[in-house]
Length: 120
Image (tube, helix red, strand yellow):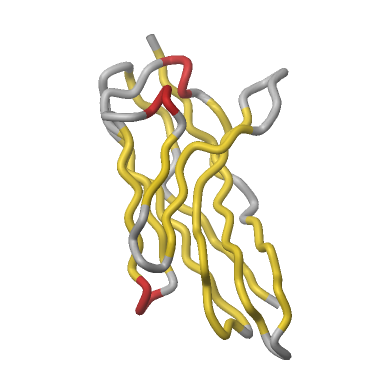
């Protein structure tokens, strides 16, 4: 199995910054894509950003230019730098990793979620 542990959420004022981290561990053979999703109260979970093992990134339009996703393949860790935060960014942020785990099976792992609250 694969476990994801997130950290870095919290409370910040509008215009501030936060950095989320997510470390993957377990019986990992390889990780193809890693990313972040978020879910605000009363809303569906949405994709925020993804990054492939080769470093190709993708962002939802609402965070382009403000958020930056990066990845340390050696540490199986993905980061989300969030700048110029807005109250509408308030949500629980979930880490996701699409992995190949022993004994060579595809496994879609999710973290437990970390709360990000942006006050106006």
